[in-house]
Image (cartoon, rainbow, N blue to C red; front, side, top):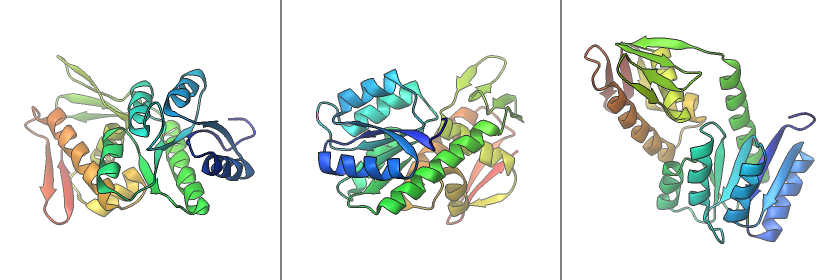
Length: 229
């Protein structure tokens, strides 16, 4: 980033909406690449460096969920916001499972989209500036900067979201953490569907930590979680 707030990859097959979003983002200081279909969009992603992705769900040649999965395999950090034309629970859940960080339902307020982009870019920048940090978790060494959870016998690579969640838990070890506080601090907002996504990541972390007898990720029903360390 030089003179821009960030480089945005926008994949939207509706020409009118695509140009409207592009123009608004550019007026607010972003550099935007607009692709008309999923296939072209992913090629753009592979050719250039972007700071954030905005993907429509219903796209020709390759849908937004598929593109999100492909992008996430190449880059664990870049924020992905899905643009969905219908407020269907299934779409939102599939989106999070595909690697998306957020969603916004059409028709949406452009100011809201701008605010969400700013929140995600701030969080990404903050994580980059935090520098290397490691924690001892039982017999495991958690290296947040390198997204690893290592033991003498095994090295595990975490996704960015797994690492963000584990970092928040271990930084607040032995404290009762409310669900809404975890969502706000790790996902940026409190939301039912983000809560469903959080539960999936909690399950993944438990699997990573299952052999640590002196470590426990407790569920406090109706309230949240406690990371016993």
